[in-house]
Length: 474
Image (cartoon, rainbow, N blue to C red; front, side):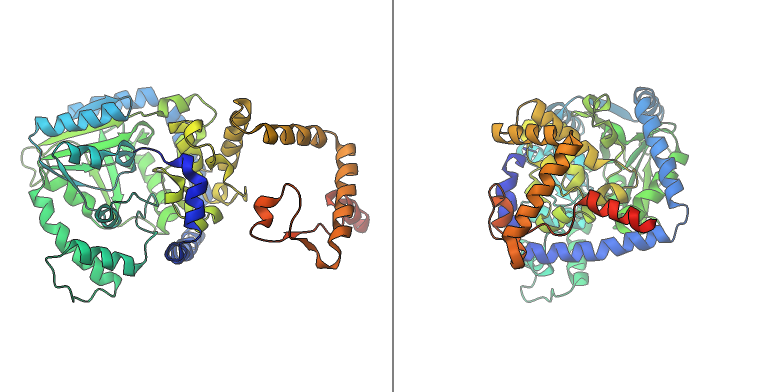
């Protein structure tokens, strides 16, 4: 998928004027935040579980070559095949070759963000292979010709009325006057449209939430059951997964699955947790005739030894998106690529290059909520600061910005001078603002005052209040 992250500011300007988007995002955050909080409160050992999960992910990254090799050995022992792909071009071509090898004309797909990275649907379609998304949200945005706006809720940017209109325009063989005023009616219509497609598909393509080294198995979790039908009813099952999805054992999977569901949707466990361990064996009632795993690097191996290594702990739960004030205001499409929200601000420039997404690491209030709710405790604000530092070192920022930061650095590293200057400026600004207590304009604050007043400083500074509180304690 071609990144549009270079146009982040233009995308944001359009997003904040979209009233439908505002309504949809409000529903998302008001639903998922309390559900996660309730699920976490109901599991007293949640923090211990997080520590365990982090240890699993860090240990795996330290020995990822060993576990990937073990995984490949076990997939082959189970009768499957593993294909190693360094980048998106090789991954797309590998999948196309597999489709041709097995005479595949139609493909059903489970939700997979790495196939979004590859732009796989467009690629397959251009080569005469028809892909059909089976996750409800993915199906909706495929009909609309859009990309996911959320990693677990792809159509979360849409209101129910917009989805109904999409169905009316796409399902023209149905009664135009049918009732479509409830979520249940829309879901039932999508189910009826998709149901007959599963059995007719030649291949099913899924992602993988985890790959188990000790068994050669892949795991997907869904709440709709579409993943089960996708991978068991077609003749060929192709799993497309990025390297960091590997974990050592099935026991490790149990730990991470408990964290994933609670952090993502506030469930104890997702409704469906499905394991695939190769093609159909003699005596099996169902399953594919052939089983392939396409392992995609696409920039991950470069991150393992770099300053953004901790980002590879991510289990794609979306908790950081659901709690981010920036994401809640602009939705996912503004980020211009597959991954959005706080994790996207780190992952997108890490995988596509800082020059392709220069604004993303800077689009944060650094409130820290993303790190607080992340089940893997990924230090997202720190990683964004790392990327900002790289931008400055690479002179990707403007001369004006670099000069201001250099002056600020000189001031901030001299405490006495800092207190003298900030104290003086604070008193001057407070006096100028007067009773109004705010500014409509100040030099170098145009980005703020264009949309709102800038509050004037009031009261003492931090050290004045700190010293006053210490005297009060005595």
